[in-house]
Amino acid sequence: MKRIVIFASGSGSNAENLIKFFRNKDNVSVIQVLTNNPHAKVIERCKRLGVSCLCFNKADFHETQYVLNLLKSYNPDLIVLAGFLWKFPEFILKVFPNKVINIHPALLPKYGGKGMYGKHVHQAVLDNKESETGITIHYVNENYDEGAIIFQAKCKVETTDTIEDITAKIHELEMTNFPKVIEKLLFKEI
Ligand code: GAR
Image (cartoon, rainbow, N blue to C red; front, side, top):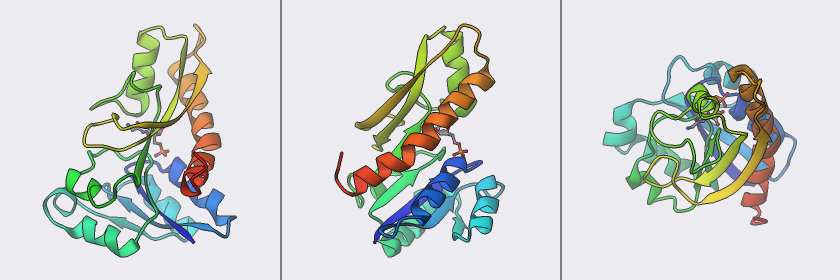
């Protein structure tokens, strides 16, 4: 059984989608969700779905071995950042080489970096009158949004699109592609 641990900071629609997708598979399981935000909606989602969700703080993550030791105890095949907004510490990455991936709501290397998350990304895409945008799934390294790219999917941006339109298109791309890409990655098909 392949084991996935998810990190999420907010709504958790990707976390829920992954939990539901792998629930129907007998060879992969989302065993744990971790959040840095005690008010995150992902906590409610996990409760409803019957998946354990633990909350940690900055010191647990950056200054002590608390989160590192938790992760070691889970023995994960993949650590998935799904809307996780803190920088991932280098000392944890070193323990899990090529096992930490992130999803970003733009076509990296465009619109990445600190502060580029959620609607901020879509607003920048609109401001720059891009004709397309999309999603990027990539390995995590010590810099925001800079690790090797695993997968990208694109969508068109119409001149009439609002931020809500872009949000909906990106959401659709994430829901459709993220679980399948993770599955392929776990079984070394990409
Ligand atoms: C997703 O669109 C994800 O790509 C984005 O946050 C959203 C989380 O939604 N991640 C980033 O912007 C990372 N820089 P969710 O909490 O509903 O899954």
